Length: 289
Image (cartoon, rainbow, N blue to C red; front, side):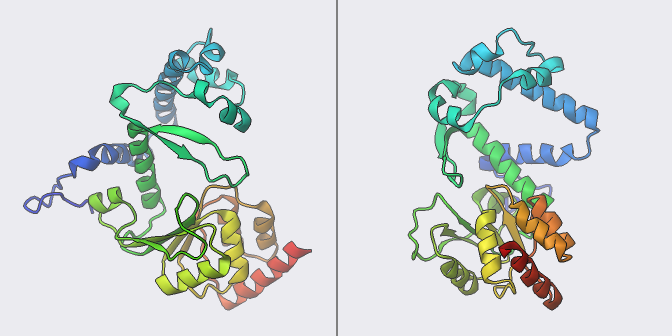
């Protein structure tokens, strides 16, 4: 239920004005699932055309590559397909020319860095408006996955100023927007540089219903503790492509639901029955062959 920012008016709820833009985008994303495919593609084309037109005059990198292309909504997807694939190396080396000038309506920009899981981290600039849209997608994902925001959410990731032996970084909520709009349970984070044994100890000591981390790290935790002693309900993969070898090995031993989610890089449960634990052990053996 939407949380009201007013103690006098509970329904219809008064949206916290600090998060009104995020909520507006969230509502539109929620409604988009019911749109006919042609209408959804039409809206995507309108937005794509706007971004292509902006890049054509605001990016030194894209301007010559978009020159001569029809950037109207009706041909926007054709224009996008005509662009050469942007490589990670180009993004690293040509960032100054790639970045677009940002209009005042989009607010100030901040620099973000990827996790570097591939050994090739990149930096991007994100405007205030883009950050709000990103937050809306986060809320949309929580709703789509039907996560109970009253429960405890944990993440093990990069980008935290935490050492390998640092205690978990605790917070009163999952994020500020979720807490203000819908209410939220507690969360905690641990650095990806923490050893797997340390991660498991934190999961056991702090407790968590949901865990978000990189697939390679999730695989290590699963191999180290296949019986899930920490009571996790859902594990959320993020940041990397899921290793197809693990998914295939799980398919061979009959863990269809689990392997389907792994293959699709979606949420997957670590709560396994005794028989599933035995089959998982066989899957691990197959991976080692």
